[in-house]
Image 1 (cartoon, rainbow over the protein chains, first blue to last red):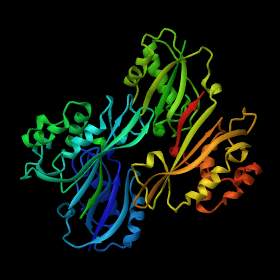
Image 2 (cartoon, rainbow over the protein chains, first blue to last red):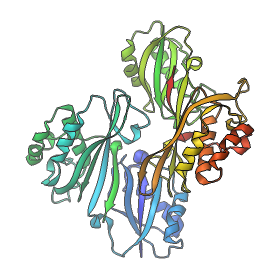
Image 3 (cartoon, each protein chain N blue to C red):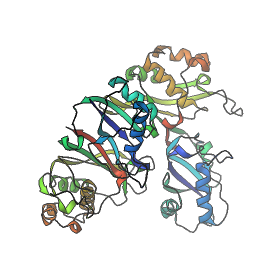
Length: 251
Length: 251
């Protein structure tokens, strides 16, 4: 039997999801908590390897749960008692043996938040990138619509992408821009994108391209041409990780 | 000439607004930045002495600005360059000499955020208190309405209140409860209260009383009687500081 967890985390102080030698990973912290609970080493397999500083509301991760003495419905509460406040398990369910979340994810939703204000608001800064110049949200939305569909997204892929990935073709099911909050000249703009999968840094480059559209640096109608060019230098800059949140994974 | 700043801060790592010996205060960090800029010691006078861990969106603070070489409209940007990311100056304007923000504040608005969810969401946890049991928001709203008006709020005042305060009578102009966000069984509930001034811990005790109303521990119609009793033990518990934000000060 495998257990499949839903996990939320504030990625600020972590070197990303994946266990590594260069810093504390979210995976490691949860695996250590599970090891305490199970009395043996545990390996977690996640749906998405979020980067350093990226947050999650609905990360999913599975582990072999044979010998688990806690009923699954009590597992979130018990695990949260062993986890720091910036990581929270919000659900646990059963999964079949051999279920590998990364390969079974049919749909992932990410949100990129941009604070558009003359001065940064520290109560939003952990979870958004700050853009000082006023953004044209309509132009961003128009550019976002051009990102929908099955395309070769090589132009939206970091050069240092995983060399084992064979194809840079991905399908974006939906991509939209909304103003989530507005207060005294300050707006919180959210880019929400759902797709079958994403290339390395793709959402952050997509968000950067929409920001360029909002600044007038990229005309929205030229987005299809930028994608078709497969030329990374024609897209917007890679936005910082703290604005990005993995919202949901659908299997 | 005095300069009057509008300041936002994430209070998590601070021992409150007021300079003190037991930890780093927001006042101290901004005064140190101003001292660098002015080449002399600067004393800031704030509208509200927020407690340790309490946040602000619209704190106001004044200082004697004679000799300031930066134009006022450039001051926020210059100061933010000298401040850590969890403190941000969002406006600067001129104020008369002798203007003491604390005595001139006619109206202060605070917001207390409560995360009502089976498991805590770490992306909200810095700025809200977590309540696991489901809250009756209508009952909270009914209890809130009973807090409006000019009352002796001794029942909502921490025992360790400032002994120099002569009266515990305060006027609450408005007090309301709203669901700010709702997602997958998780709600972010906000208590917003505006008044002429507040006693020590008053908003956190008021929020705790509304939470008790939401849990069914205090019937909303008994709130006037609890206030009239002037008995601290009859009100709800003092909610933790991280849920509280000073939103606005009106002079």
